[in-house]
Length: 333
Image: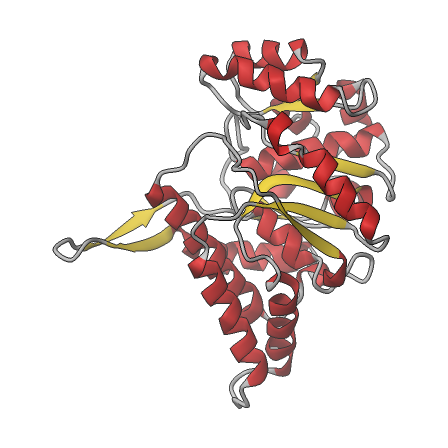
C-alpha cells in the first residue's frame, strides 16, 4: 500500500473488510510502503494488521544487497510495487508461512472487491485442479498486443533452425511461450500463490514483478508452468486508472523483459545471486528507454522510466544472512 491520496481511505477500508471477512482473524496484512496516515488508519479500521516497509528493510544488510541490485542507495518510502511485495513476503517468512499455505495478494486501491470476488473465483479455480500452485485473475479488454508479440518471438526462437540461436535459448523460448500463452489478457494484481513460491522465487522491484513470478514458474519443478491458472473475471477491476502512456510503458517493459530473459538463456529458477547481479548490471538498466510513436503528424518520443531491478528470493537472502529473519520476527510480532 503506497497510495497517498486521503480520498482513497474508504476504498482501503472496504478492501480490508472484504479480506478480513473471508480470512482467519489476524491473517490479513497491509504493507505500508509510504501511504498517507489516513489510508493506514483505514486499513486498520477494516480489520487488517499494518506492517511498515521501512522497518522491515531495517533488517536487511544493504551493504551486501545493493551491489547485487546495482543500486547506489537503499530504497526509502514509495519505492515501487515489487519492493512493497518483497517486504511483505519477508514478513510472511518471519511469521512462519508454510510451503503448502495459500497466500492471497491484492492491490490496496481496488474499489470493487465485493463485486470482483477474487478470493471466491480463485479458490474455485484452485479446487478444480489439485496441481495448481499459482492462480491469477485475468482482466479482459486491456491492450496487451506488445506482450503477445513478445511471446510470439519466443515461439519463433524455439522453432526456427537458426545456427546463431543457442539450444538453451531455443528451449527457454519454448518454455516461456508455453507458460504464458494462456495469458490472453493483462492480469490484475490479484492472485493466489503457495508459500513455497513466496519464499523461493525471485522478485522484480516494480511492474515486472508479476511477469518474473509467472516466468520463474516455467522451469521450476516444484510448481511448473502447467500448474499456473489464469482465471478470467468478467467484472471490470476498478482501481487507480493508468494513462494510456503509462499502460504502454508497462507493456513495453514486460515485452522487452521477456526477450531479455530468453536471450540470457538461463531459466529464472536457475538464477543465483551472481546471475541476478549480472542481469541487473547488463539487461535491467536498459529497460528504461521506451519509444512511443505519436500520431501521424507527431514525432516519436522516448520515455525514460525508472528501471526495475531483479531481487533474489527471500529464502536465499536469509540463507546468506543478508536478511536478519530474527529481527524481522521482532518487528512483526
